[in-house]
Length: 515
Image (cartoon, rainbow, N blue to C red):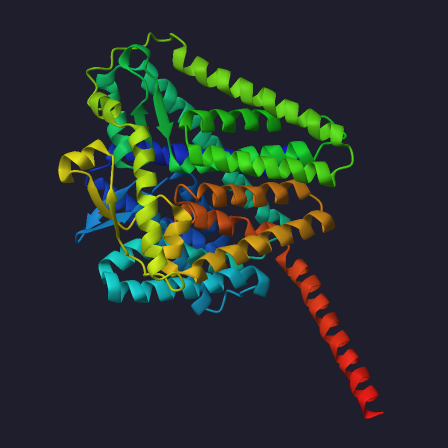
């Protein structure tokens, strides 16, 4: 069942399509053909989405799962950068509007599923209006536009989520995950085994398309590279789904080999990414799942056994990453002729950490000036940065409206209502996942998906993901797998029972007083 849910002919077609799109982008970036390809992509995805909204939505999910910042392809149009992500968004949402106007779409409404997004929309509109007047329309729009992906909630509400349609999403995710794991490991190997002159073209491609950050971590004699992609958040999801399968499924039978391989591959990617935020989020979610398994499952020795097995997977992943870097096939080259050598070696992560903490105090001071309603999108903070490049340009003073402290960013720009919206979403997520796990099969899948959102909530503390299409789309991705409607009926029944009891008590009290 585990394999059938994620792997199938559709999965491998998706992997092939992702590979083909990256190869095509490698050869046509910065050429006149790029604009033509984007136009064809819009037309093609519009037609596919108009015929099957599920297909269009799956394409949108795939692009965000693998595309990082969404600039695999982009063109300048009237001074405005039009990216592949924008083109796909326009195509899918145009198809939704066309079908809705023709009366071919029916919204399947669920008040509990949509409640947090209604609150978030109110906070966004308030923050945007305030930002336009206080900080300028350009800055406010540039700051808020990542939240436009919330519009994909409309297609989510328009699709009948059967087991078949859910499998389409899972296989879209699986194809994306296979690509991210494979591409990450390939880049790590290539950058430590190919000469710098040849690598210049590849480095320029992944940098300009904003797919990955490749930075030298040690001096030349013992060099290795950190290969980080925002889309490696997909590996966090794979790890937590694997962990969920280990803890909550197959407890009385042999664990499928695919679960172990998925755990090893995802851990290898997280180790090589050296992302503190990803690792912290994944570790926190794994700990919560482990505690839930101990409390929920009777045979606790199985939980301990699977914990040991996950530790073995982590050790294998570490060895695999080390071997990939050090294997002398071919011989590790001299990279001093690489155009990115000096830049990479001078970019220190230590300075970035110092700068992040230097930002926190001015950020809190600015929040304290308007803690309830915030200061709107585009609100800026000035602080002293330790980045050598900024020091060379300004002496260290840096002003920005993009912050690494994700929750502080939401609080500053949308006020407490923005925080409340995410808190309501998280509460409904946890409670409906708990209900689903107790009333339906495949509890490991729902627990794993809910835990992956929790991991992003933790990571968002130090790196902005929930105000990024990656975080927003993952919050939408898990919705079809949650039985919010069933949980909502239970809550509504309890509320009605409470109101009936109150009326009965009032009637008795009134009768007694009359006597």
